[in-house]
Length: 243
Image (cartoon, rainbow, N blue to C red; front, side):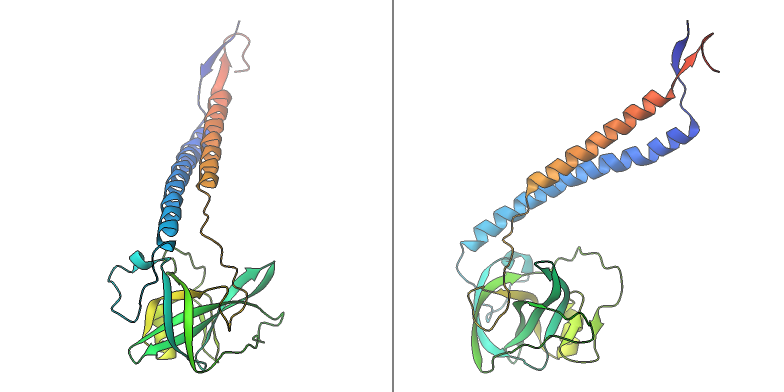
């Protein structure tokens, strides 16, 4: 009668030692993401109930503390220095988000995200749109761009013309390009407000359950990998073995 003995091979061992920690790490990362999403969801719901803040006054040094806060502000649009944020999709159509600087005072301006517009099949042709002149009252929600986004290229701005086309928000570069004292956040204009475009701002609903589901999948894959490794390396020894 042959017996089985655990005799791990070199290649299966190397593959398992590489893949197993990665799968386990991804599982715990998704658990952390679920907790982070729950915190963001709670923060959004709480701040939505707070009164609108006055950004004409001094802004707190802790910018994150005003993320998702409602705001009401008046000023004049800088029609000459508008920005189109590229690669924004609505109903499976690629387009732009229109960011128009609102000049609040001589020392303060803010980018107002007026919503989405469709782009042309010819990327050299930029969409045409209207921007009101005169003093405007803007209602909206403060949005702070994530600093964790991964950019696959250093190319960001087409500086050859206005409106300028950006791939992502870079306040330092935008201040230099517009020559305006831009605040370090944007205002997503209220969907019911005038002089805007498609403003179907997604409510913050990050579904922590989805991350929890992904975590389970990663852990299951790690368990399966370990099971395969053990099964493959338990080999027959003795008279009936092939060795």
